[in-house]
Image (cartoon, rainbow, N blue to C red; front, side, top):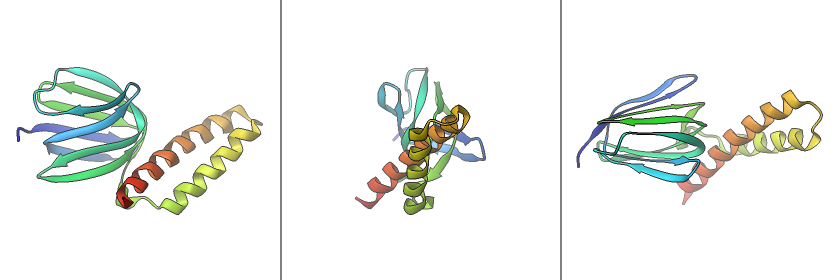
Amino acid sequence: MKQFTMRISAIQRDFYTGVCESLVFTTVDGMVGVLAGHEPTVYAVEAGELRFTADGETRILAVGEGIARVSGEKVTILVDFAELADEIDAIRAREEAERAEAIIRAKEDSRAVAGAEAALSRALAQMKVVSKLKK
């Protein structure tokens, strides 16, 4: 299978740089797949699942919102966070989602609500990826 180079960077770390055979991630318009030779495009990445195959091994990540740029035989993905599915603590993610939902429901402080919405987005992405890993 043809390969392309890919870089996934999150705010706290460069997650992956190397060759890739296929890539699937969530955008505002739904799931998008990328193979070598994909038309140059820029996508708005939604928090959720990202899968890529490198050296015949498929890796599943939870990622935050960001952008993906496909140009030639290179893909660059910049996101808020990126975590491998097996790095995620499902119980902690569920607890974080519950705390964030409580803050959002209270609607007491707009700054706290904004932070809680970001935390909820991250926790939901983590829980989705972990649930798929268990299947």
